[in-house]
Length: 321
Image (cartoon, rainbow, N blue to C red):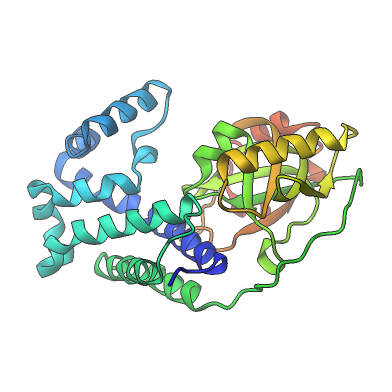
């Protein structure tokens, strides 16, 4: 039996919570043993194609701690030197960590690519593995967050939003949890999510903030949000410019078919002018909610570039978040 779209979305969020906590754990384990050379030791556990991609991203200016991803964990856990470092926390389960990480990555691939054949047993196993690892590394808060998220009941009814064409966009930053998906947001300048009510609804906002790794890492302006039901059916969720609606429909359909061919219907945020920033979530734990809003009207910014520059290296707590 395959899991439904709601269960996929919950697992996707759980994976995002997990990687935000497990990534710094891996860094701390290696730093304790190898100091500032931790990343050189970590790279030794990667496959050749993973090492090539790692080096390429380093050249692009990315930080090593930000490059650690789900496909890397199994190799990290297999390494005998790392197993000795992990044994203090995992004890007799140290040898099982690689298997757990492999199963988690398999489920993650299914969820991230909206795999229509993700089996319920795989999903259940992934949840168990995520919670078990959180418990063994002593992160009881993460363990509870994962437990609560798995059990949560969210609105499952699909609602087609009424058009809000050319309404005045509010001076608000829509901070969206993009953990596990931020690379796609950067590369394609779109954010894609399921259509529905409750947590899936978004207020009309001028700006989009891509949250991952305990920070908003990029800010862009939202041109339009389009619901794509099929190759022949689209509907406006909202539009903030005077550009021809048909142009937005065509762009949204093209992205939906290219990136989610088996996942329709979807909601497509069409973004422009994405600028890197480092707006830091300085409170404990990751962002558990799917989204949150920050009113930026008093900041008197004119565009996404000014907002990204103003929020760079500032903390959420400064704004009461």
